[in-house]
Image 1 (cartoon, rainbow, N blue to C red):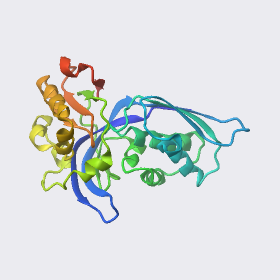
Image 2 (image 1 turned 90 degrees about the vertical axis):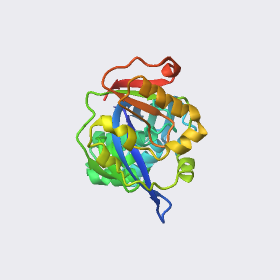
Image 3 (image 1 turned 180 degrees about the vertical axis):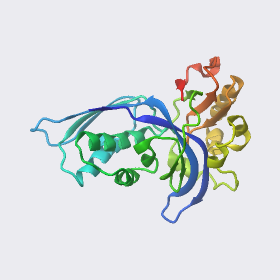
Image 4 (image 1 turned 90 degrees about the horizontal axis):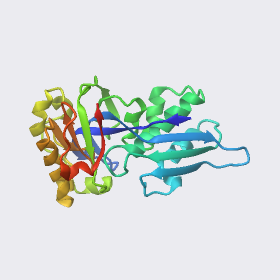
Amino acid sequence: MIAFPKAKINLGLKVIRKRPDGFHDIETVFYPVDFCDALEFVVQPEKIHEDALVVTGHDIHIKPEKNLVIRAIKKLKQHYTLPYFRIHLHKAIPSGAGLGGGSSDAAYILKTINRHFNLSIDNDILISMALELGSDCPFFINAVPSIATGRGEILQPLEPFLSGFWLVLVNPRIRISTREAYLNTRPSDTSSNPGTIVSQDITRWKKSLVNDFEDFAFRLYPQLEEYKKSLYKAGALYSSMSGSGSTIYGIFEGKPDIPHDIRDFVIYEGIL
């Protein structure tokens, strides 16, 4: 079995409030990107009675047993009889980059095993299982452009309104903790909602479509703001940080000439 978990970018991200359960209510627009990890998993021989995970590519800085891939398999095994697996996860999507790579890996495990073993798990149940693994995970069950509210799990699907635009992802190999980002970001007092703004022409996004995590991230790593400026100078119609960082992206009408100062940090470019 092979799956290719996609990345996502956030178009705007508004932190609304901290909830009694410790999570935060947000509003953002998730947009899927054809920048993928690779997941290959096979059934273990009968004499082996444990799941095994091998990771190549980007370091994920976490023990295999705590990886979302293994946790997703264990979640399925709470309800279904499944064999033990040997999983090879090749990480092209950096962790701690605001691209949802780990969440996507977990969601793709859930839906790939569901399909391959004919478990017939309803899509809504898959989404509920994904939410138990992480706030971003439910989005990747369907992986279509969506307005996300609540913790990020309340999803309103949208048409792929950026089809044909060119995307550039810049990542300076900096890992930003989502927890630290929330601790250092005040709830937004703006009335502008990402879901409303993206319905406008993209040329109007620059001044109104805001990621609330940028202030913290740019104070901590000023070079991130410089990369954003470089993308605008290169002709980006819109540029922002994705999630809690550290990836900066630019959306262009066509393939741009990448500025020299960020060329070495481009991890992906392609058509949306």
